[in-house]
Length: 285
Image (cartoon, rainbow, N blue to C red; front, top):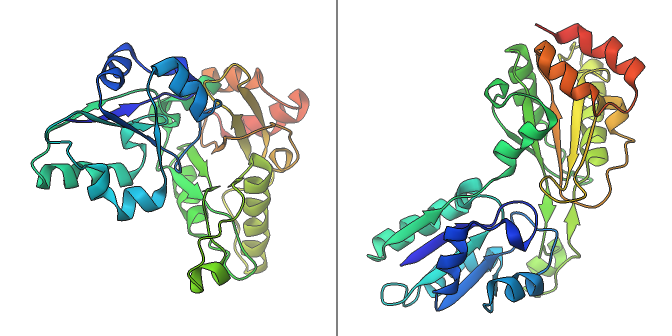
């Protein structure tokens, strides 16, 4: 049996009882280590689970999945994912590979950022399409995610923005030369995401457009959701570019039309209550 086990968002104790039971009876246990990150390290998980964990990076999961599934037809193998197992499409691919090999599988779900964002008070059924904001480079500055945010906002919907993670990435030079040398891990902050959105707004105006999202659009910054030191801040997009939320992982929400109850909840986390009132009241139902 192949078990895909969600670990939740906080620390080692966020695994479900069902998930922990599965992990402890497995012969091999892999820890997916590139789509997200917990607030504790591999060693803390091993101590709590009572199992040695094998780190599974992107290369292993995407290019060496058959070795990961080896002997899963005659023994139990677990694949641990921060959040919920299906928070990334990569894991659907793993299920399809298992099915083709005749390996039965079981999914044990857990909380993910997709539903835990409700902690800020915005109602989950008022969210539109989720987008990913990627790190820009000097030569690559995509804006397609902004169009999706605009479309959501025009429909009155909020947008959850998942922020880029760079783990075990190679520089272009090392990649071209086939050198297994990797860049230090990088995690996009709310500040960086906001700065990129502000740059896109300026660019759109330069092109004669009138963006739906502006510097004064109310946004929500979230950091380490589910952890003891979780942090939430609400304010304008401009304020999100300077707010200090600390260590990763971060997420950003661009609000749409807000219900009065949503507005009351966001006030609890406002970085500047006076400016929050002025800008938030522009988009309430």
